Image (cartoon, rainbow, N blue to C red; front, top):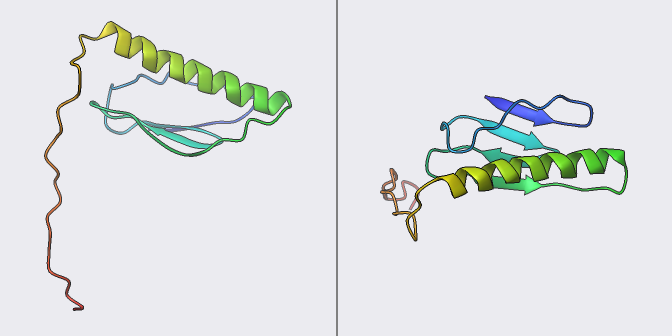
Length: 94
Protein backbone atom coordinates (compact mmCIF):
# COMPACT_ATOMS: atom_id res chain seq x y z
CA UNK A 1 0.00 0.00 0.00
CA UNK A 2 1.62 3.22 -1.13
CA UNK A 3 0.13 6.57 -0.25
CA UNK A 4 1.29 9.89 -1.65
CA UNK A 5 0.23 13.03 0.15
CA UNK A 6 0.16 16.33 -1.69
CA UNK A 7 -1.79 19.46 -1.01
CA UNK A 8 -5.52 18.89 -1.29
CA UNK A 9 -5.31 15.09 -1.03
CA UNK A 10 -7.37 13.46 1.68
CA UNK A 11 -4.91 11.30 3.65
CA UNK A 12 -5.81 7.77 4.65
CA UNK A 13 -4.76 6.50 8.05
CA UNK A 14 -1.13 5.43 8.44
CA UNK A 15 -1.03 2.71 11.09
CA UNK A 16 2.52 2.50 12.47
CA UNK A 17 4.05 -0.97 12.85
CA UNK A 18 0.89 -2.59 11.42
CA UNK A 19 2.41 -4.29 8.39
CA UNK A 20 5.52 -4.71 6.27
CA UNK A 21 4.14 -3.13 3.09
CA UNK A 22 2.63 0.32 3.67
CA UNK A 23 4.55 3.35 2.47
CA UNK A 24 3.41 6.89 3.07
CA UNK A 25 4.94 9.60 0.92
CA UNK A 26 4.85 13.29 1.78
CA UNK A 27 6.52 15.31 -0.95
CA UNK A 28 9.83 13.49 -1.46
CA UNK A 29 9.85 11.87 1.99
CA UNK A 30 8.87 8.20 2.28
CA UNK A 31 7.91 6.46 5.51
CA UNK A 32 8.15 2.69 5.07
CA UNK A 33 6.11 0.75 7.60
CA UNK A 34 7.46 -2.35 9.28
CA UNK A 35 6.40 -4.50 12.20
CA UNK A 36 9.60 -3.71 14.12
CA UNK A 37 10.61 -0.34 12.69
CA UNK A 38 9.64 2.49 10.37
CA UNK A 39 12.26 3.58 7.84
CA UNK A 40 12.29 7.20 6.69
CA UNK A 41 13.98 8.08 3.39
CA UNK A 42 14.19 11.09 1.12
CA UNK A 43 13.76 14.79 1.65
CA UNK A 44 10.90 17.16 2.21
CA UNK A 45 10.80 20.87 1.41
CA UNK A 46 8.54 22.78 3.76
CA UNK A 47 8.05 25.95 1.75
CA UNK A 48 6.62 29.10 3.23
CA UNK A 49 3.26 28.80 1.49
CA UNK A 50 -0.02 26.88 1.83
CA UNK A 51 1.44 23.78 0.20
CA UNK A 52 4.35 23.79 2.66
CA UNK A 53 1.95 24.23 5.55
CA UNK A 54 -0.11 21.25 4.38
CA UNK A 55 3.02 19.05 4.08
CA UNK A 56 4.16 20.18 7.56
CA UNK A 57 0.77 19.36 9.04
CA UNK A 58 0.77 15.91 7.42
CA UNK A 59 4.29 15.21 8.67
CA UNK A 60 3.26 16.26 12.17
CA UNK A 61 0.16 14.03 12.05
CA UNK A 62 2.14 10.99 10.93
CA UNK A 63 4.84 11.63 13.55
CA UNK A 64 2.16 11.94 16.24
CA UNK A 65 0.64 8.56 15.26
CA UNK A 66 4.09 6.95 15.44
CA UNK A 67 4.78 8.48 18.86
CA UNK A 68 1.35 7.41 20.14
CA UNK A 69 1.93 3.83 18.96
CA UNK A 70 5.31 3.74 20.70
CA UNK A 71 3.95 5.27 23.90
CA UNK A 72 1.13 2.70 24.01
CA UNK A 73 3.53 -0.24 23.71
CA UNK A 74 5.52 -2.02 26.40
CA UNK A 75 8.96 -1.17 24.99
CA UNK A 76 12.34 -2.70 25.77
CA UNK A 77 15.28 -0.37 26.38
CA UNK A 78 16.59 -1.31 22.94
CA UNK A 79 15.09 -3.38 20.12
CA UNK A 80 16.82 -6.72 19.56
CA UNK A 81 18.91 -6.92 16.40
CA UNK A 82 17.42 -9.25 13.81
CA UNK A 83 19.48 -11.66 11.79
CA UNK A 84 20.21 -10.41 8.32
CA UNK A 85 18.94 -12.41 5.39
CA UNK A 86 22.01 -11.48 3.33
CA UNK A 87 25.08 -13.61 2.82
CA UNK A 88 28.56 -12.84 1.64
CA UNK A 89 29.52 -14.21 -1.79
CA UNK A 90 32.76 -14.13 -3.74
CA UNK A 91 33.09 -11.43 -6.37
CA UNK A 92 32.50 -13.18 -9.72
CA UNK A 93 34.47 -10.46 -11.55
CA UNK A 94 37.64 -10.67 -9.46
